[in-house]
Image: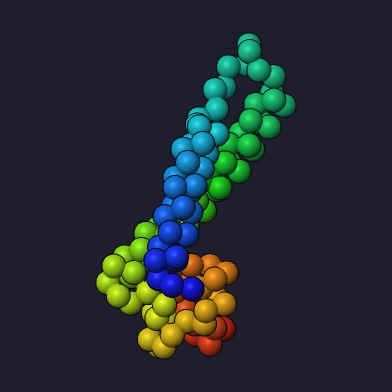
Length: 110
C-alpha cells in the first residue's frame, strides 16, 4: 500500500475517533445524585455506565494520539520503519493497523 493510502486511512480514522470522543465525553459526564428524581439502583447503574464511558474515552484518546504520531512519522518520512530497530514494518502489520510502531520481531520482544 502506498503512503498516501495510509495517510487517507489515518485521516478517516482520526475523524471517526474525534467524533467518538465527543460522543463519549457526553456519556462520561458527571452523574447527578438527586435521590428525589432517581433511585439508588438507577444511580449506581448510571455511575457504572459513566465509569465504562470514561474508560472508553481514555482508549479513544490513546488511539487519537497514536494516529497523530503516525501522521507525524509520514510527514517526517519515517513512516513504516520500526521505532525500535528501524527496519521496515511488515506490510500486513501496517494494513492491519496503520498506526503500528513496531515490527513483528520487536513487538514480540516487548
